[in-house]
Amino acid sequence: MNLSYRNLKLITCGTFAVMLVAGFTSCGKKDVNSPGFEFMPDMYRSPSLEYYGTHIINGDTLNSSKLPVAGTIARGFIPYVYPNTPDGYTSAGLYLKNPLDYTEAIEKEGEVLYGKYCVHCHGATGGGDGKVGAKLPGPPPAYNVALKDLPQGKIFHSITYGKGTMGAHQSLLTQEERWKLVYYVQKLQGPKTVAVDSTAKVAAATPTVEPAKH
Image (cartoon, rainbow, N blue to C red):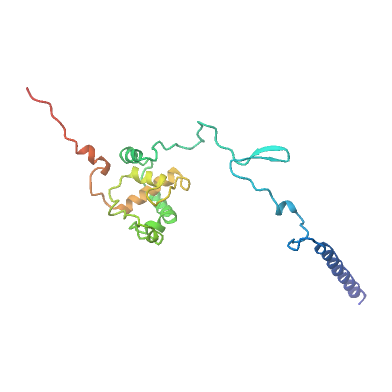
């Protein structure tokens, strides 16, 4: 009985002390919108920093984000040499080839990437009937119709820089992932209807002049 009474006194005194402290810390504020006492003000009022800016914090000059040294290439990164121009697009179609050897496993990985990044606009079968694509000014062209003979280099180039209403994906996918995606897009294209790339038609149409016989 004595033990229970002692515990009751401790609980009562503790509750009163907490209420007293809360009253002192919440009253007497001039700002009616103040939340009261801030236990860790640095967590509530942390300084905001702008990207690529120079800031002085506690006397130290710091850069919030540093740019790479001019002319350097990150280890493991392969620069993409074709520019985002009409000529670069044409050249990629003529000369750019998939460096990955085809396997069903790589194509399957491309299918997974397609489901994450492409199906929303291009549709499950590449017909341009995705739910997001239907809301665009013009739906994406079908892989097995308008883009059936699009060469692999142009597919990669379009994924890298974007094309029309399609945004660039070079910041979202590595070069290896983009090439895996190319393999799956080629599967959605179906069998080719021409023996050579469509970009080579102009060169193929140039007549060959035979030397005159004497």
